[in-house]
Length: 305
Image (cartoon, rainbow, N blue to C red):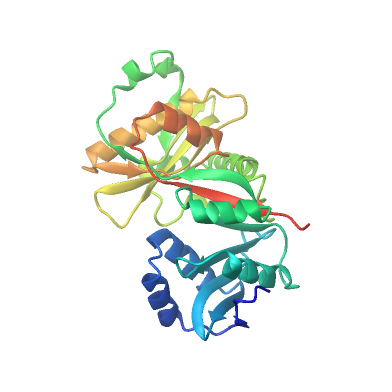
């Protein structure tokens, strides 16, 4: 342990309000604050660790597990500004020595956080994905003009409200969403969850059933695109989207255009996306539509040495 660190304290009953106050005083941004607090408040929290220097709190780490992605240990680490890496080194070493953790270790930071990026790279972490959260201003799209190669009369589009009334079609959708999600999260695998869990996630209370679509041919799903509400009434959020294996990705883009037109009809000015570089369908959407530039998150993993 570095000599300038007086004490590392494992605090399983941290004062959340005091931690919020401390993080704010360190100038922690909103994402980092929320990411840290998410781990701090979860029932699957492993530990919260404090670093003191001359009786002053100068660093914090919290770690946790999730039921949905159970094969790694998530953590968040923050420290007082204008200090060296000794505090983070000590906190990370303390975490790595705990018996409860399961490798790989995983965390996410802003791409612009050069200091944190350098720290993790120097400690053997590798980047597994980047996540973009851009905004798309809505304007009506002429689908026939935007997709002249699709003979629209050969296909049918159903919203999820209609699709859910057909048990066979609903089951096909759930299985396809599950399969595509598992493929795009190969580096951080999903646990074993029944189809009921996936149904719950797809038909969640914030899913806009009339603004989420599937495109069909001969009652087979070629592509799907989900849409979600947000706290802002003038704002929607793009949800999961994908295609059946070997299906042209343009069918998914076609559905996305329908979602944009749906938003225009509802008077919604913008739609936000969360796009992982491991999700090929979402990346195609990012390339095709005029999203605004946005900050990028980097997710790092480290395996046991």
